[in-house]
Image 1 (cartoon, rainbow, N blue to C red):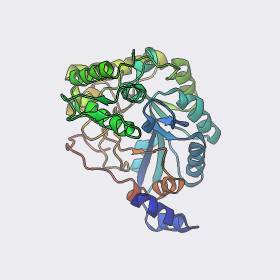
Image 2 (image 1 turned 60 degrees about the vertical axis):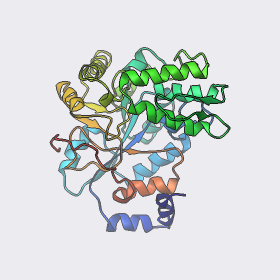
Image 3 (image 1 turned 120 degrees about the horizontal axis):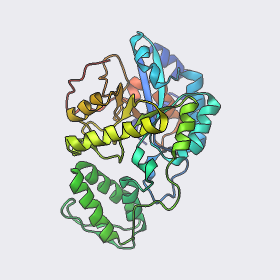
Length: 344
């Protein structure tokens, strides 16, 4: 059990968390980020993408509604302009089907707004994203080891209980590589795993545009998440521009709206750069969201608005402590490259 979880359990004593929240005030917007809702414990895909079970998400929304001011993305700038105000925003990345089938009905039931950042290529031409395909190849292959010495030293042993760690190793390697090298790694993995993968999901994986339009018509914000979900900083300027402008074009065509909000794929400090920010500015994006912790404040850069991960293994005590005392439980990791982007 980690330190945060232990501390959160101590804070679960009746009234203590509420007293501390009032005695240790914070200001800004805590932006929570989810990917998938449901039970991913038996999935052959990337199980780390499940952020909460349906019951846990329902409980989290109940707590937020009772204890927080949950706002839409359109309210963030005005909220940050008010000194001493504290708010929460809810976001989802990628466009998975369970966002519509499980998360969206609960959001409507609780009458809470949320934002959904869509990778439009997966909606237009449904296929497995690279992270789910890597997980599927490792989980379904019958070979005993993988040898990818160009990218990972030593063999990757696929003994019982070790495949989850192999998946994490492969995902880390993929994210670190330039686009062409990442594609080469995935191609070599397909060859060695010998699973016959063609990248097509066996069942419906993504929302469709009818679902997305329904959410947009009922109080949900729709933002951009590129076309194909590459790690943008690993791509050329032309490729970054195509991914961002292409996403904006599809949102405009399908929803009749501008891409005011954008979330960086992966979202870590090194997943975007100054070229990315220039492309966003050229596309008319108002705010762009990263994904490595922290609270949004007046000092946050317009194209580096922090978000905090919600993870399925997270105990209820820890979620509530995060929401009540984010200045202690949601600290931002160090930025690798200082931004020249002006603050809000």
